[in-house]
Image (cartoon, rainbow, N blue to C red):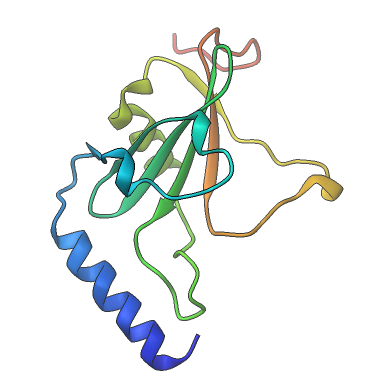
Length: 133
């Protein structure tokens, strides 16, 4: 990406981010990102820092696909989403009452096309989770 394209995208995202607060709001379907699995998307939410897609992965399991709404010099979404941010996002989108896991796949199954994080939210809970006292 050349400097002009980068500056244009940064300016656009900066203006867009100012339209939102820290609170997540649902986006109408015409504003959802386009991709092959779009029919499984239940809802898309956005705030001034993150875009979250809630995807029905299978019965009782939803996947949260999370990316920042800012790009780096390389033209990719900014990386570095922390554990605290992921937990806060899960809570903010209404799934705080469920366990979620992040998967690190076998080397030959890795797909890394964007700086996104994925949480699989399991309605039944996971048996290996730590439980508060």
